[in-house]
Amino acid sequence: MSTDAPMTLAGDFPARTHEEWRDLAAAVVNKTRAADAALSGEAAEDSLRTHLAGGLTVDPLYLRPASPRPLGVPGAMPFTRGRALRDPVRPWDVRQLHDDPAVATTRAAILDDLEHGVSSVWVHIGTDGLAAADLPEALADVDLALAPVVVSSVDAQPEAAAALRAILTAAPGASGNLGLDPLGAAARLGTDPAAGLEALPAALEGLDAAHIRAVTVDARVYRDAGATAVEEVGYAVATGLAYLRACEAAGIAAASAFPHIEFRVSASADQFLTIASLRALRHLWARVGEVLDVPEAERGARIHAVTALRMFTRDDPWVNVLRSTISTFAASVGGADAITVLPYDTVAGLPERFSRRLARNTQIVLSDESNIARVSDPAGGSWYVEALTDDVAEAAWTVLQEVEAAGGMAAALADGLVMQRLAAAIAETEKGLATRRLPLTGVSMFPLAGETPLARPARAALPGGGLEPRRDATAYEALRDRAAALDTPPAVVIAALGTRRDFGARETFVANLLAAGGIVTQTVEGTPEEVAAAASARHTSVVALASSPKGYAAHAADAISGLRAAGIATIVVAGRARELGEAADQVDVEAFDGADILALLDDLLTRLGAPAEGADR
Figure 1 (tube, rainbow, N blue to C red):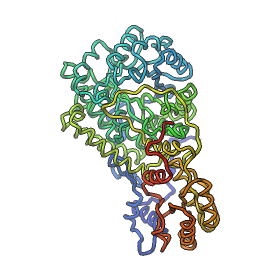
Figure 2 (figure 1 turned 30 degrees about the vertical axis):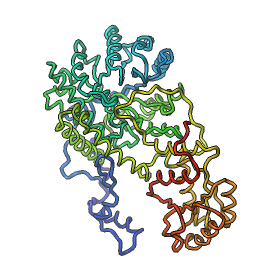
Figure 3 (figure 1 turned 180 degrees about the vertical axis):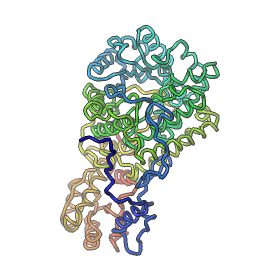
Figure 4 (figure 1 turned 90 degrees about the vertical axis):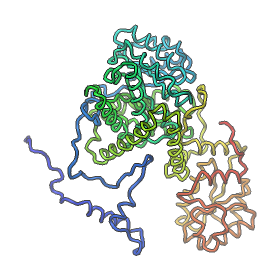
């Protein structure tokens, strides 16, 4: 029996108010609090809020607003829900990056990718990539009528653009993007930001933007240098606006220049923030187009999302596969027009064939087997996603206004405004990484001990002077390098006090914490003399105590006295020293959740004899 009546799946459930939910949440929160420290409903809700970089706040509950704004549809103003309806057969370009300077290797890799599911080609040119003169050979096997080609470059943009333009204009039906981004290159190299703007309009002459676009605003240069997701969106829009102004000054109307611009942004493992950022970028760019009287059909931002290099790790690189899967899912849900998954071994150097295959198959499996591409903007209507999109858009618009007040993106780069904002963002991120509030799986949390580092051919380095890429894991990797520089791995013996029930949780905690710095551990359940003997056999004078507060009260004083008598120089307590009662001042280091783990590990490595700078791995 069929019916046109709507299904009321929640119709049998009583309506609940926000206040009722808040009181229920408070009852749960207060279960672990003393009666005189119980939180009100409002205070309990506030305790459940989380904060993201860029001044964003995430509430614990989102309800349908009393008067919700229209959600809109894909392909129409304000384009938040997508530039167009998604094609379920080819929902986005599976775009693989090629940056191997060996032209024969790159040519073979491009063909291999296209034969196994990649739909567009991205070639990086310059000192850290392929030579511009080698581009024709690298693309010799590509059917340019079927596979779009884009290029990027930092230090050879005019040469890269000219090489690709010659190839595409000579091939009927070819399409692609010349990759011009003078402000991005200046930011990376530290050169005059205004120098390349004057030449930009000439690159658009004679090009049909429906097939060959000239400009890629690569905002990853800011995100990789430490910017927040909000700042990346704000700088992307500010840069696009600067290019429109440069074209207008040369007599090219915004309506003609608008279709030439594509955005390349980061997709991080924070899936909801990535989804919201892509949606917010389209919203803001459409508003720019509206103000400049660009026809509505052309206002939708073309977005190329790339798995964020900043989140990739050298150590335990297999976790990069998981990060990439999450960020690819988010880029798809956020409506990216093209997605690139960096290979899991990209930090180690130039990728191998297997890692390239894994990268492209991450996209193909998500698209073809997980069916995430069968719905346009599947997150639309989620009040959390809608609210987060609005928050990102408003905060990024504030960044844009700040840049505009400084005279535009070129001026903001030249006078240090961008660097000032980056410094603040970096400081916030470093604090979160040090305390593990921003955890790095496989690095700061659950590190893989005894792994064999990947060996890959190294990439050539670009000259310095501008915004240097910085990965979140590098501080922990530096600690691992210090540990690896020793002839034998630095060791700490864990003195397990009491029963397994007493020490089990903190033994695991401190062992994993120390492993993040390359320090191996051995747990000993025995007398202080037996613990000291194990430490001597390990050639260490550092012992960590592990127990519950009850266990510390019963055993810590005697254990510390015995360990000191046996010659143990450094005693670490897993937890807070105050839990040891009268023996609180007898320990040297506190290892607890929320401590500055980087400083703690740095100190312990120094005590264990590690050199100040680790040897190359």
